Length: 360
Image (cartoon, rainbow, N blue to C red):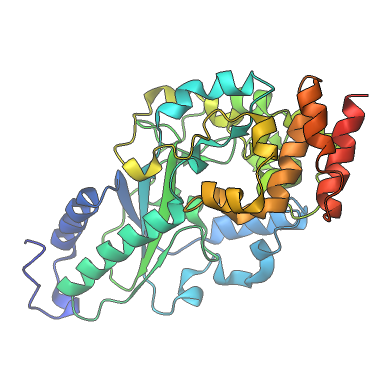
């Protein structure tokens, strides 16, 4: 069956195995590295989520509990959903090779490697919509909805059920052949597609991700306290970064990759062929003083089409101020910090004052 030859039989008579083979072929042509299909039973994930929320580990991420059971019961979110197609798109690029050297240079800012290219939300959703449209063209009565970190969807449990990998001790997904440098997206559908089998976990006795975490956010294997996580503080948190974590942030100004950088399975990760995820705007190894001198217009220009833009200019300055407080003392650093003392933002000023105190 080709993509240009629609199935001429009613939906309930469609050969779903044959359709699934076509879907895998189409997804590969669209740049997905792997897809898998799961049913919609997330009862185990639901109980784990409830326990995580009860402990307050979500911090200020109120959206994690805002939608009730629609997050863990796909048919409540999209009526008629029978299956979920989970898709994986790898993003490893050459910037990973310099990650550790950037972290070791306190005069530069470290940006999580996933955010150096084009905003993955846009890339994944666009490709998934193309895939969904192609499926709908073949099968009358197809209903679907596309997601990529954009709605109450249990992305990682669904990916795990569909065989894309297993949940590592750092709570990121790991694929045995390709490591953990990949994005996830989902396609909810009413088609009764054949489901894939989950893979087995292979973390074993390794605790590298737990040991490396600068803020001890991985409180036990497979359990993350977001309130301690640098990615949470630099991206999700809207207010002041707790003082107790500022020194540990070092020069990380957007996200944190430490747990993935030390994961042994990432030795197998291959470079992504997706050019949209290549580094842009010279942010692989940026000078902190120069970044702190940006005005808002420059920030918007340099982060156009990037996931970084979501934190806004003031939180960007907040994060850099902390990094400058952790940088070696110099006139350039101190003058840069003093240049922001007259800011109208209480948030930025608080972190600038803290940073200056570190150099007294």
